[in-house]
Length: 60
Image (cartoon, rainbow, N blue to C red; front, side, top):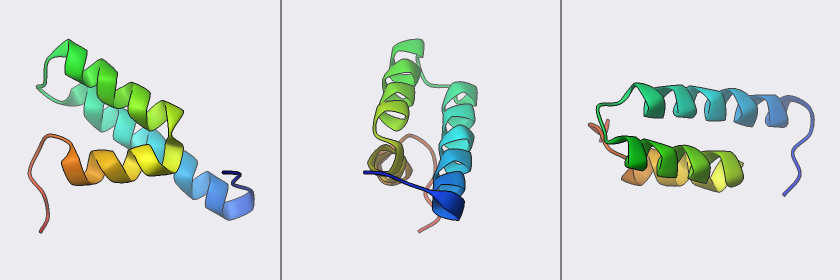
């Protein structure tokens, strides 16, 4: 999947935000590393998976 222009920037900033939130979470280090790798290796899909299945309270 190739992202260019404004869409690519949005995905990049969202991934950076997700990785920062993952690293600041109280989860175990192994879980943090696993989630960060998923988001890093699968930028858009990993972000969606983390948002829906990751630790923490959900807005819905």
